[in-house]
Amino acid sequence: MLQTVLEPQTAEKAALFRETYLAAYRFMLLARLLDDKFAALWRSGRIHGGVFLGRGQEALSAATGISLKKGDVFAPLIRDAAGRLAFGETVLDAARTYLGSARGPMGGRDGNVHRGKPKEGYLPMISHLGAMISVVNGILLARRFKNHAGTVGAASIGDGATSTGAFHEALNQAAVEKLPLVLVVANNHYAYSTPISRQFACRDLADKAAGYGVEVDSMDGTDLNACLETVGQAVDRARAGRGPQMVVATLLRLCGHGEHDDAGYIDPELKKSPVGRDCQKVAEDYLIRQKWADPATLATWRTEAVHKIEEAIAQVQREPGPDPFTEEWRAISTQRLNEGHE
Image (cartoon, rainbow, N blue to C red; front, side, top):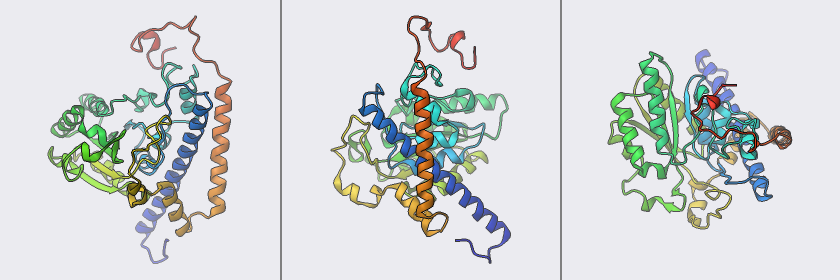
Protein backbone atom coordinates (compact mmCIF):
# COMPACT_ATOMS: atom_id res chain seq x y z
CA MET A 1 0.00 0.00 0.00
CA LEU A 2 1.39 3.42 -0.95
CA GLN A 3 2.46 5.68 1.94
CA THR A 4 2.48 9.49 1.90
CA VAL A 5 6.13 9.51 3.00
CA LEU A 6 7.32 8.02 -0.30
CA GLU A 7 9.63 10.15 -2.38
CA PRO A 8 8.04 11.45 -5.65
CA GLN A 9 10.16 9.11 -7.81
CA THR A 10 9.33 6.12 -5.62
CA ALA A 11 5.64 7.05 -5.55
CA GLU A 12 5.66 7.34 -9.35
CA LYS A 13 7.26 3.90 -9.68
CA ALA A 14 4.76 2.44 -7.22
CA ALA A 15 1.86 3.90 -9.20
CA LEU A 16 3.29 2.52 -12.43
CA PHE A 17 3.68 -0.92 -10.86
CA ARG A 18 0.09 -0.83 -9.63
CA GLU A 19 -1.12 0.06 -13.12
CA THR A 20 0.98 -2.71 -14.67
CA TYR A 21 -0.16 -5.28 -12.12
CA LEU A 22 -3.82 -4.47 -12.68
CA ALA A 23 -3.42 -4.68 -16.46
CA ALA A 24 -1.53 -7.97 -16.22
CA TYR A 25 -4.17 -9.46 -13.93
CA ARG A 26 -6.94 -8.55 -16.35
CA PHE A 27 -5.04 -10.22 -19.20
CA MET A 28 -4.71 -13.29 -16.97
CA LEU A 29 -8.43 -13.26 -16.25
CA LEU A 30 -9.38 -12.80 -19.91
CA ALA A 31 -7.02 -15.61 -20.95
CA ARG A 32 -8.39 -18.00 -18.30
CA LEU A 33 -11.99 -17.38 -19.34
CA LEU A 34 -11.15 -17.56 -23.05
CA ASP A 35 -9.37 -20.88 -22.49
CA ASP A 36 -12.41 -22.18 -20.61
CA LYS A 37 -14.65 -21.16 -23.51
CA PHE A 38 -12.42 -22.91 -26.06
CA ALA A 39 -12.44 -26.04 -23.90
CA ALA A 40 -16.25 -26.01 -23.78
CA LEU A 41 -16.46 -25.53 -27.56
CA TRP A 42 -14.02 -28.41 -28.09
CA ARG A 43 -16.05 -30.72 -25.85
CA SER A 44 -19.20 -29.85 -27.80
CA GLY A 45 -17.51 -30.66 -31.11
CA ARG A 46 -17.34 -27.08 -32.37
CA ILE A 47 -13.51 -27.00 -32.45
CA HIS A 48 -11.48 -29.54 -34.42
CA GLY A 49 -7.91 -30.39 -33.47
CA GLY A 50 -6.44 -29.70 -30.06
CA VAL A 51 -7.20 -27.16 -27.35
CA PHE A 52 -4.31 -26.33 -25.04
CA LEU A 53 -4.95 -24.39 -21.84
CA GLY A 54 -2.62 -22.09 -19.93
CA ARG A 55 -4.21 -22.76 -16.55
CA GLY A 56 -1.57 -22.16 -13.88
CA GLN A 57 0.86 -20.36 -16.19
CA GLU A 58 -1.02 -17.11 -16.81
CA ALA A 59 1.08 -15.00 -14.44
CA LEU A 60 4.34 -15.82 -16.22
CA SER A 61 2.69 -15.44 -19.61
CA ALA A 62 1.08 -12.07 -18.89
CA ALA A 63 4.31 -10.75 -17.38
CA THR A 64 6.20 -11.68 -20.55
CA GLY A 65 3.74 -10.09 -22.95
CA ILE A 66 3.28 -6.92 -20.92
CA SER A 67 7.04 -6.41 -20.48
CA LEU A 68 7.56 -6.12 -24.24
CA LYS A 69 7.07 -3.00 -26.36
CA LYS A 70 5.77 -2.28 -29.83
CA GLY A 71 8.51 -3.34 -32.24
CA ASP A 72 9.73 -6.21 -30.06
CA VAL A 73 9.46 -9.86 -31.09
CA PHE A 74 7.40 -12.46 -29.22
CA ALA A 75 7.48 -16.21 -29.86
CA PRO A 76 4.78 -17.57 -27.53
CA LEU A 77 4.50 -20.91 -25.79
CA ILE A 78 1.60 -23.29 -26.33
CA ARG A 79 0.07 -21.98 -23.07
CA ASP A 80 0.69 -18.28 -23.66
CA ALA A 81 -2.87 -17.02 -24.13
CA ALA A 82 -2.32 -14.30 -21.53
CA GLY A 83 0.97 -13.22 -23.06
CA ARG A 84 -0.54 -13.14 -26.54
CA LEU A 85 -3.33 -10.86 -25.33
CA ALA A 86 -0.87 -8.63 -23.46
CA PHE A 87 1.28 -8.38 -26.59
CA GLY A 88 -1.70 -7.19 -28.63
CA GLU A 89 -3.62 -10.19 -29.92
CA THR A 90 -7.38 -9.70 -29.94
CA VAL A 91 -9.97 -12.13 -28.63
CA LEU A 92 -11.47 -12.02 -32.13
CA ASP A 93 -8.25 -13.27 -33.78
CA ALA A 94 -7.87 -16.05 -31.21
CA ALA A 95 -11.46 -17.16 -31.75
CA ARG A 96 -11.15 -16.96 -35.53
CA THR A 97 -8.14 -19.24 -35.49
CA TYR A 98 -9.67 -21.87 -33.22
CA LEU A 99 -12.96 -21.87 -35.13
CA GLY A 100 -11.37 -21.84 -38.59
CA SER A 101 -12.67 -18.50 -39.85
CA ALA A 102 -11.26 -17.40 -43.20
CA ARG A 103 -11.00 -13.91 -41.69
CA GLY A 104 -8.51 -15.01 -39.04
CA PRO A 105 -4.78 -14.22 -39.10
CA MET A 106 -4.02 -17.60 -40.71
CA GLY A 107 -6.96 -17.48 -43.11
CA GLY A 108 -8.48 -20.64 -41.66
CA ARG A 109 -5.40 -22.60 -42.73
CA ASP A 110 -4.10 -23.62 -39.33
CA GLY A 111 -5.79 -24.14 -36.02
CA ASN A 112 -5.35 -23.48 -32.31
CA VAL A 113 -1.96 -22.10 -31.22
CA HIS A 114 -0.26 -21.86 -34.64
CA ARG A 115 -1.17 -18.27 -35.31
CA GLY A 116 0.60 -14.94 -35.48
CA LYS A 117 1.40 -11.75 -37.38
CA PRO A 118 5.11 -11.77 -38.20
CA LYS A 119 5.15 -8.19 -39.48
CA GLU A 120 4.03 -7.10 -36.02
CA GLY A 121 6.67 -9.24 -34.30
CA TYR A 122 4.11 -11.84 -33.21
CA LEU A 123 5.38 -15.19 -34.45
CA PRO A 124 3.25 -18.23 -35.32
CA MET A 125 4.35 -21.04 -33.06
CA ILE A 126 6.33 -24.09 -34.15
CA SER A 127 5.20 -27.00 -31.97
CA HIS A 128 8.81 -28.11 -31.47
CA LEU A 129 9.31 -25.11 -29.21
CA GLY A 130 13.09 -25.26 -28.95
CA ALA A 131 13.12 -24.31 -32.64
CA MET A 132 11.49 -20.95 -31.90
CA ILE A 133 14.63 -19.68 -30.17
CA SER A 134 16.65 -19.77 -33.39
CA VAL A 135 13.77 -18.09 -35.27
CA VAL A 136 13.88 -15.19 -32.82
CA ASN A 137 17.69 -15.14 -33.08
CA GLY A 138 17.41 -14.85 -36.85
CA ILE A 139 15.06 -11.87 -36.61
CA LEU A 140 17.32 -10.14 -34.08
CA LEU A 141 20.37 -10.71 -36.29
CA ALA A 142 18.53 -9.38 -39.34
CA ARG A 143 17.63 -6.24 -37.41
CA ARG A 144 21.25 -5.83 -36.38
CA PHE A 145 22.34 -6.07 -40.02
CA LYS A 146 19.83 -3.31 -40.84
CA ASN A 147 21.03 -1.16 -37.91
CA HIS A 148 17.69 -1.44 -36.10
CA ALA A 149 18.55 -1.08 -32.41
CA GLY A 150 16.58 -1.03 -29.18
CA THR A 151 14.32 -4.03 -29.71
CA VAL A 152 14.13 -7.28 -27.76
CA GLY A 153 13.05 -10.77 -28.74
CA ALA A 154 11.32 -13.04 -26.24
CA ALA A 155 10.96 -16.78 -26.74
CA SER A 156 8.83 -18.85 -24.37
CA ILE A 157 9.52 -22.54 -23.85
CA GLY A 158 8.83 -25.27 -21.32
CA ASP A 159 11.23 -27.47 -19.38
CA GLY A 160 10.97 -30.15 -22.07
CA ALA A 161 12.34 -27.84 -24.76
CA THR A 162 15.53 -27.35 -22.75
CA SER A 163 16.36 -31.00 -23.48
CA THR A 164 16.38 -30.49 -27.26
CA GLY A 165 19.38 -29.86 -29.44
CA ALA A 166 17.68 -26.77 -30.89
CA PHE A 167 17.69 -25.16 -27.42
CA HIS A 168 21.43 -25.65 -26.93
CA GLU A 169 22.44 -24.53 -30.41
CA ALA A 170 20.26 -21.42 -30.31
CA LEU A 171 21.24 -20.40 -26.77
CA ASN A 172 24.91 -20.78 -27.69
CA GLN A 173 24.41 -18.66 -30.81
CA ALA A 174 22.57 -15.95 -28.86
CA ALA A 175 25.37 -15.84 -26.28
CA VAL A 176 28.18 -15.66 -28.84
CA GLU A 177 26.38 -12.94 -30.83
CA LYS A 178 25.23 -11.14 -27.66
CA LEU A 179 21.70 -10.95 -29.00
CA PRO A 180 18.94 -9.15 -27.03
CA LEU A 181 17.10 -12.43 -26.47
CA VAL A 182 14.97 -13.10 -23.40
CA LEU A 183 14.37 -16.82 -22.98
CA VAL A 184 11.42 -17.50 -20.69
CA VAL A 185 11.33 -21.07 -19.37
CA ALA A 186 8.19 -22.40 -17.71
CA ASN A 187 9.37 -25.27 -15.53
CA ASN A 188 6.02 -26.98 -15.00
CA HIS A 189 7.73 -30.26 -14.03
CA TYR A 190 6.47 -32.29 -16.98
CA ALA A 191 7.33 -32.45 -20.68
CA TYR A 192 3.84 -33.65 -21.55
CA SER A 193 3.91 -36.63 -19.13
CA THR A 194 7.69 -37.01 -18.63
CA PRO A 195 8.74 -35.71 -15.18
CA ILE A 196 11.81 -33.51 -14.87
CA SER A 197 13.63 -36.31 -13.01
CA ARG A 198 13.73 -38.14 -16.36
CA GLN A 199 14.63 -35.05 -18.39
CA PHE A 200 17.83 -33.68 -16.88
CA ALA A 201 20.29 -34.44 -14.11
CA CYS A 202 21.45 -30.91 -13.25
CA ARG A 203 20.31 -29.42 -9.97
CA ASP A 204 18.35 -26.62 -11.59
CA LEU A 205 17.42 -25.56 -15.11
CA ALA A 206 19.18 -22.27 -14.42
CA ASP A 207 22.47 -24.21 -14.46
CA LYS A 208 22.06 -24.70 -18.20
CA ALA A 209 22.31 -20.96 -18.83
CA ALA A 210 25.55 -20.62 -16.89
CA GLY A 211 27.23 -23.09 -19.19
CA TYR A 212 26.81 -20.66 -22.08
CA GLY A 213 27.66 -17.50 -20.17
CA VAL A 214 24.06 -16.33 -20.13
CA GLU A 215 22.63 -14.28 -17.26
CA VAL A 216 19.79 -16.12 -15.55
CA ASP A 217 17.19 -15.54 -12.84
CA SER A 218 14.82 -17.99 -11.17
CA MET A 219 11.45 -17.12 -9.73
CA ASP A 220 8.14 -18.34 -8.36
CA GLY A 221 5.94 -18.63 -11.44
CA THR A 222 2.76 -18.64 -9.36
CA ASP A 223 3.41 -15.07 -8.12
CA LEU A 224 2.51 -12.31 -10.60
CA ASN A 225 4.52 -9.83 -8.54
CA ALA A 226 7.70 -11.91 -8.90
CA CYS A 227 7.03 -12.58 -12.59
CA LEU A 228 6.56 -8.91 -13.45
CA GLU A 229 9.71 -7.91 -11.59
CA THR A 230 11.97 -10.71 -12.85
CA VAL A 231 10.86 -10.79 -16.48
CA GLY A 232 10.76 -6.99 -16.61
CA GLN A 233 14.33 -6.73 -15.37
CA ALA A 234 15.51 -9.37 -17.85
CA VAL A 235 13.90 -7.45 -20.72
CA ASP A 236 15.52 -4.22 -19.53
CA ARG A 237 18.97 -5.85 -19.36
CA ALA A 238 18.62 -7.31 -22.85
CA ARG A 239 17.47 -3.96 -24.21
CA ALA A 240 20.44 -2.26 -22.56
CA GLY A 241 22.87 -4.44 -24.51
CA ARG A 242 23.80 -7.02 -21.88
CA GLY A 243 23.18 -9.94 -24.21
CA PRO A 244 20.75 -12.84 -23.85
CA GLN A 245 18.84 -13.34 -20.63
CA MET A 246 17.13 -16.43 -19.31
CA VAL A 247 14.43 -16.62 -16.66
CA VAL A 248 13.20 -19.87 -15.14
CA ALA A 249 9.78 -19.90 -13.52
CA THR A 250 8.80 -22.76 -11.25
CA LEU A 251 5.11 -23.62 -11.41
CA LEU A 252 2.71 -26.43 -12.27
CA ARG A 253 0.39 -26.96 -15.19
CA LEU A 254 -3.05 -27.16 -13.55
CA CYS A 255 -4.58 -29.14 -16.39
CA GLY A 256 -3.66 -31.77 -18.94
CA HIS A 257 -1.27 -31.21 -21.81
CA GLY A 258 -4.43 -30.57 -23.83
CA GLU A 259 -8.13 -31.10 -23.33
CA HIS A 260 -7.64 -34.67 -24.56
CA ASP A 261 -5.35 -35.42 -21.58
CA ASP A 262 -6.60 -36.02 -18.02
CA ALA A 263 -3.12 -35.41 -16.49
CA GLY A 264 -3.43 -38.47 -14.26
CA TYR A 265 0.37 -38.75 -14.23
CA ILE A 266 0.89 -35.54 -12.21
CA ASP A 267 2.13 -36.24 -8.70
CA PRO A 268 -0.67 -35.36 -6.21
CA GLU A 269 1.97 -34.08 -3.76
CA LEU A 270 3.06 -31.49 -6.32
CA LYS A 271 -0.50 -30.23 -6.54
CA LYS A 272 -0.51 -29.72 -2.77
CA SER A 273 2.87 -27.99 -2.74
CA PRO A 274 3.55 -24.25 -3.27
CA VAL A 275 4.25 -24.82 -6.99
CA GLY A 276 0.67 -26.11 -7.31
CA ARG A 277 -0.85 -22.77 -6.31
CA ASP A 278 -3.25 -21.18 -8.78
CA CYS A 279 -1.56 -17.97 -9.92
CA GLN A 280 -5.00 -16.45 -10.60
CA LYS A 281 -6.04 -16.87 -6.97
CA VAL A 282 -2.65 -15.64 -5.73
CA ALA A 283 -3.02 -12.47 -7.81
CA GLU A 284 -6.59 -11.88 -6.64
CA ASP A 285 -5.59 -12.25 -2.99
CA TYR A 286 -2.77 -9.74 -3.55
CA LEU A 287 -5.15 -7.24 -5.17
CA ILE A 288 -7.51 -7.45 -2.22
CA ARG A 289 -4.70 -7.17 0.35
CA GLN A 290 -3.36 -4.08 -1.42
CA LYS A 291 -6.91 -2.67 -1.60
CA TRP A 292 -6.49 -2.24 -5.36
CA ALA A 293 -9.72 -4.17 -5.91
CA ASP A 294 -12.50 -5.75 -3.89
CA PRO A 295 -14.58 -8.87 -4.59
CA ALA A 296 -17.29 -6.80 -6.28
CA THR A 297 -14.75 -5.22 -8.64
CA LEU A 298 -13.26 -8.62 -9.47
CA ALA A 299 -16.74 -9.93 -10.24
CA THR A 300 -17.40 -6.96 -12.53
CA TRP A 301 -14.15 -7.55 -14.43
CA ARG A 302 -15.09 -11.20 -14.85
CA THR A 303 -18.54 -10.31 -16.20
CA GLU A 304 -17.00 -7.84 -18.65
CA ALA A 305 -14.49 -10.43 -19.87
CA VAL A 306 -17.18 -13.08 -20.35
CA HIS A 307 -19.30 -10.64 -22.34
CA LYS A 308 -16.35 -9.73 -24.56
CA ILE A 309 -15.60 -13.40 -25.23
CA GLU A 310 -19.21 -14.37 -25.93
CA GLU A 311 -19.59 -11.44 -28.29
CA ALA A 312 -16.47 -12.45 -30.23
CA ILE A 313 -17.48 -16.13 -30.42
CA ALA A 314 -20.95 -15.22 -31.66
CA GLN A 315 -19.45 -13.05 -34.40
CA VAL A 316 -16.93 -15.68 -35.51
CA GLN A 317 -19.54 -18.43 -35.64
CA ARG A 318 -21.32 -16.39 -38.32
CA GLU A 319 -18.15 -16.03 -40.42
CA PRO A 320 -17.30 -18.37 -43.31
CA GLY A 321 -14.43 -20.83 -43.38
CA PRO A 322 -12.14 -21.14 -46.41
CA ASP A 323 -13.96 -22.49 -49.48
CA PRO A 324 -12.04 -25.55 -50.78
CA PHE A 325 -13.58 -25.14 -54.24
CA THR A 326 -12.37 -21.59 -54.76
CA GLU A 327 -9.30 -21.46 -52.55
CA GLU A 328 -5.91 -21.67 -54.24
CA TRP A 329 -4.02 -23.98 -51.89
CA ARG A 330 -0.51 -22.66 -52.33
CA ALA A 331 2.44 -22.53 -50.01
CA ILE A 332 2.43 -19.63 -47.57
CA SER A 333 5.58 -18.23 -49.20
CA THR A 334 3.93 -17.56 -52.56
CA GLN A 335 3.11 -14.00 -53.52
CA ARG A 336 -0.62 -14.46 -53.20
CA LEU A 337 -0.38 -15.47 -49.56
CA ASN A 338 2.37 -13.12 -48.42
CA GLU A 339 1.21 -11.28 -45.33
CA GLY A 340 -0.47 -8.02 -46.22
CA HIS A 341 -0.96 -8.94 -49.88
CA GLU A 342 -4.47 -8.43 -51.19
